[in-house]
Image 1 (tube, rainbow, N blue to C red):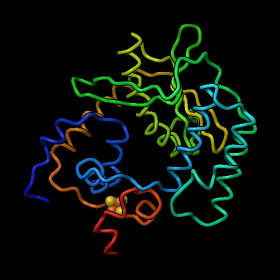
Image 2: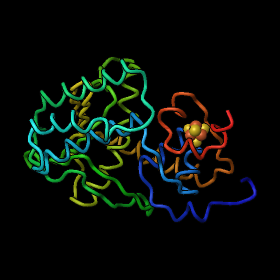
Image 3: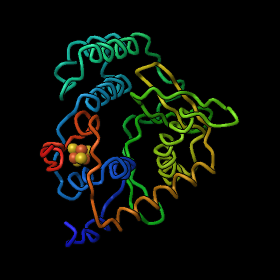
Length: 258
Ligand code: SF4
């Protein structure tokens, strides 16, 4: 692998937050997904997230009522949530959390502009693509919402940021990158960036902050440069990720040879 330069291929790529994050999780997974282009096998946690996204999307498109979302969740869970099952108590916890969320489901407090909005934009000439889960408007201001299965916590506002504050900041990078798309498409930045944490029912509304936006843009640019310059797509083997998260583990010689 070291003899071949993949740089020309990488130079031509259209980027997304997940394409960058994948490299940070495991450079070899990134190589298998984006250079070798292996199709991903659905995994439990990712397909649970996709299933919940789909139900919420169908509600906003007027294809499902609140009651129908609950019925569909129960009827289709086994079919839609694929991959190696974690232990039964974890599966049950996820079913209960999903059902609780859907039972108490309240539409977001904005006027809807779009759901699963595909945005194609540029950051300093580099092409990006993204899918904004929900884009709403209130009093002429834009709001973007990302549906997350992670149990993020609203900012603590303590003097020293907590571990959960740092996790929130990392997750917000994705929405700051989408903010560049909102600015390019609608002429102004969103007023706030929101997370709808459907496993816990927590809704987080974070006011747009220009410094955090600039930090996220610099983060994306630096990461893309690092990927372009990478000469070794090394495996980052970690049991949980390889077993439950990675969708290309069947193609991974390092994992298969364990
Ligand atoms: S199985 Fe593990 S080491 Fe292999 S590509 Fe996936 S995450 Fe990386």
